[in-house]
Amino acid sequence: MKNNEITTIKIKRKTKDRFEKLRLHEKESYDEIVQRILNILNVCRANPENAQEKLERIEELRRRKKFV
Image 1 (spheres, one colour):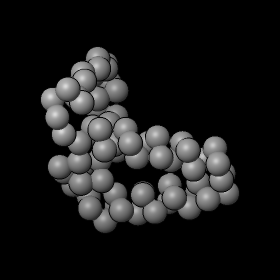
Image 2: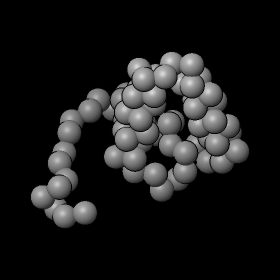
Image 3: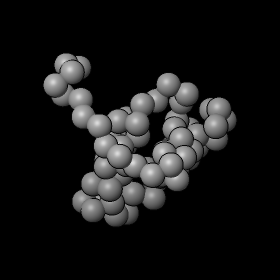
């Protein structure tokens, strides 16, 4: 990734803490977390019946990793 493709956003500490809890693995970046959230949102909008299944798979991954 080029430096001109990177930006900085301000978020509250509380929001950062929430991002930390959403990590699927220890090295997952905030960008990856945001991309996953946006992907889930798009699935919810386009195909709500599949959204719950996707969320359950992600939660299962988090439980198996248990690094947080």
